[in-house]
Length: 163
Image (tube, rainbow, N blue to C red):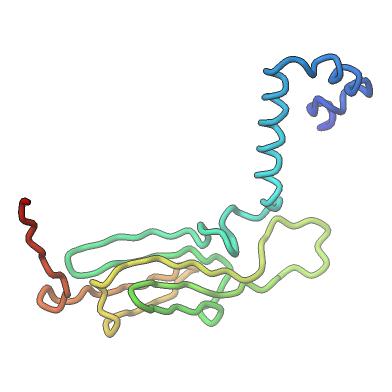
């Protein structure tokens, strides 16, 4: 069975005559409109490119863990080296930025992705920017961010009166 056999508008060439007869049916009109909306939505995603590359959030895949003393962020960056990745912390936001170079020259077909990426995580004011470390091993970038001491956190409790 060919893929085109699964697409209803390619089964026969008399679809336009059937549509004219069905124009008065509100359920078919709703069905066509929903199909159009989903087609328009999914058109922005490229084949073989994981959702979230580039301007979308979601790549690289990350894992965030937290203890009383630190926040640890691990990002999967397969096929990359530490020199290809830039890590910054500004105003409580950790940003991972980089570029994966193309490794295949003249491939007939490839689902491998290459290009630039950027991912930011808002971690808040509890992070001490002077105590951040990063390591890269086996395609995993691990950023460890120490939290400020309790006395250094600038949280002001405001009492609420009735009234």
